[in-house]
Amino acid sequence: MGLLLREVPASCLVVAVDPGKAFNRVWLATGDGGLIGEPVSLPVLRDGVDALERLVAESGVPGDPVVGLEATGGLHRAWAAEIERRWPGSLRLFAPSETAAARAQLGSRRFKTDDRDCAALVWLVRQGAGRRAGDLSAVEAMLGAVRHRRQLVDARRVLQQRLHDQLNALCPGLSAPAGHGRALKLETPTGQAVLACAAAFEGRPPTKRSLLARAPGRMTEATAGFWADRWKRLLEPPADAQLRARRLGRDLGRWQDLDIDIAMAEDELAMLLAQTDGQVLTTLPGVATVRAAEFAAYTLPIERWQTPERLYSATGLAPATYQSSTVTRRGRISRQGLAEHRNALMNIAWGLSQNSQAFKERDRELRARGFRPIQARVALARHACRLCWRLLQTQHPYDERRYAHARQRGR
Image 1 (cartoon, helix red, strand yellow):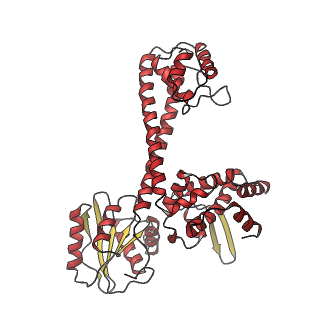
Image 2: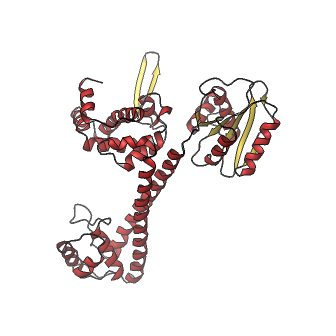
Image 3: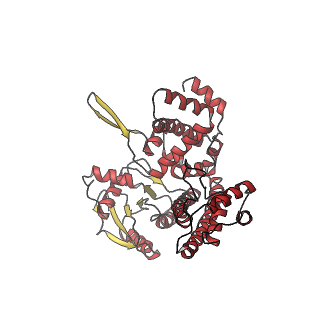
């Protein structure tokens, strides 16, 4: 339609859609006539889009509409795909933060309603703001896979802590915390073998042969002997050991299933990342599939960010700034944007600081200047953001020598 980043003509029909779980709030308006009809709530089903098409036809405004849709998680995706199919090129997507900023401009920052959001969307569309939906199927699919994996990892972390607690209750003193003896890492073959024996023998000491037989991977006889001998020195299991062992066995099965699901999710990420421009990020030292996919899913398409500074600011790592007349103050990081986007960039900065010689030197320089570890990592994230933005723009793989040479030249 050629209206992106240009003011929409007053005669053009603007449709604002604020998505919900069951119903979407819809406004129809023009610059000449204002609001057309009353705001309506349409179901998220196909009937809702059919009703929207009838409303557009009955509005009497010639030409295709310009549709502004708030991109809220996964609520908007079904309607976005159908609107783009029925009115190709007419859809513009807005982040919730853009809608909130527009509400503030309209004097409704602290009063959020669906109608106020629709009014903000109409205001944004008329100014030519927003981004095209385009063909982002691979990026959307990768974003869904990233979020799914994150949920699985969070669930595994909680379950892993519960396994530690259950093992300590069933076999008191077997798993010593770090710094108090040999700690038991449950994700290793040794940890899996110990858990399996605790569940199978109801907390009673197993033999070295039993531990070796239940290890899913490599476990030396010396390691098996250590845990078997340590087990024999424990106190007796509690009176309800049978029930505890049964619960431990079921939770161990859930943990193993989660581990398999996470591995499958990472395979899906590798496949989806290869279909996007984010694949080039895997050329960075210390940045493999998961870190590259997490950052690319929240960053692509890179055309959204005209400069690396805008991308860095969107992650929320840029310091908040106050300026009035001759007074300029810089505070802590702004924390605006998505925490997942911020964490993804911090993970890339961590990987580079551990595996890239140029970033190791930067880290040492920052520490020598008195930066605390987290401060140095945030500073490194700014350089990592510039580097990632450049790689995504040019699609050239990372070259350590070229980057070090550019750094020496002060670029």
